[in-house]
Amino acid sequence: MGQFKDAPIFDADTHMYETPEALTRHLPEKFHRAVQFVQVGRATRIAILGKITEYIPNPTFERVAAPGSYEKFFSGRNKEGLTLREMTTPIDSLPAFRAPEPRIEALDEQGVAEALVYPTLANLVEHSAAEDPDLVVAMIHALNQWMLETWGFTHENRLFMTPVITCGLVDEARRELEFVLANGAKAVLMKPAPVRGYKGWRSPALPEFDPLWKDVEDAGVPVVLHASQPPLDSYINMWEPPDTNNFTAMSAFRWLALGHREVADMLGSLICHGTLTRFPKLRIASVENGSAWIRPLFDDFEALYAKMPQNFEEHPLDVFRRNIWVSPFWEGSVADVVETVGWDRVMFGSDYPHPEGLSEPKGFWHYAEGMDEKRTRDFMGDNARRFLGLPVRNPAGDHAPVAV
Image (tube, rainbow, N blue to C red; front, side, top):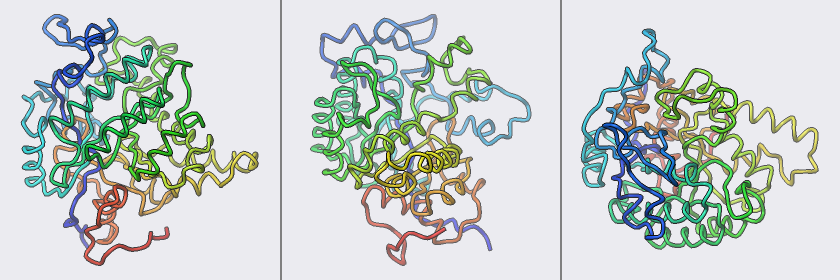
């Protein structure tokens, strides 16, 4: 029996390419000198607080690597030993990368029904501006205002943009949440990392952040934890000072050490610090963080609970399975999620139009694992619709989670 391929696709991992004014158009005047686009030779770079960040090598996105350029690398078929730079196929940024109407046309051509759409520049804001929490708040609000003007937060009930909530300053985070919800946001984006406020670094899962999480739970809005500039950079720099922080030029050790530890730590904090027990209706998704970290984290939770059950009001694995959704890498193992979290918690994501993604979402069928029709419908679309609280498109209707 062949793989069923006609499920209405909800792509839970797609992106926009912003223009430079996304960070500057609405930035208060007192912060204008803190965020600048500067020329370095023939290249344009972004400088935040006087420091050039290379994490995103081309922050104007006028020329970008073609979607799917790095497929051979990420699928493990790089027999020639090419670097990501050598694999890059540069193209002019397409209208579908920049605005909602052309993106809708692209969805129709790709056979995609709906998609979550994440900003790209947001990946570097909180990391690069962390020493000034007020600047972080101002940059995030400026980005969200630009996103609202350019894309909207919901477009034709098919594109669901993800405005950013930065948690470092709780009162400001609550105001930003109120702003994006009032303007139609159906999901919000958070960085999986500690946050820096006036008191220094801390986990956003500590009780001092409960007013924000209560607002999130009361609103019923889901939260996406999407991969971004790794918070472990400074630690890894002690092992191997980088020639560049540009992810296309990272060394083998940096790839090994970075992994996706940050999302495991973030979810571990949300569970160990009790946020998901105090607010059991929260819906949290890990997107573009892979799935290989799940089994080790589950093993750690099992061992931890056996040693100190008094520290948990609920078994941590029960909390994870109740509150967490996971979108594995397109080249990764869906089974990693299914066998630990369950079929109702796994979502498809292509990472379009990023070069590390697929050239088109239906390219996933090259890596499919032989799911039957019902589970294909769940993975390719309906689980993401459940995550957002939207109607499912399974002709048989909604159903209870499948036991694995």
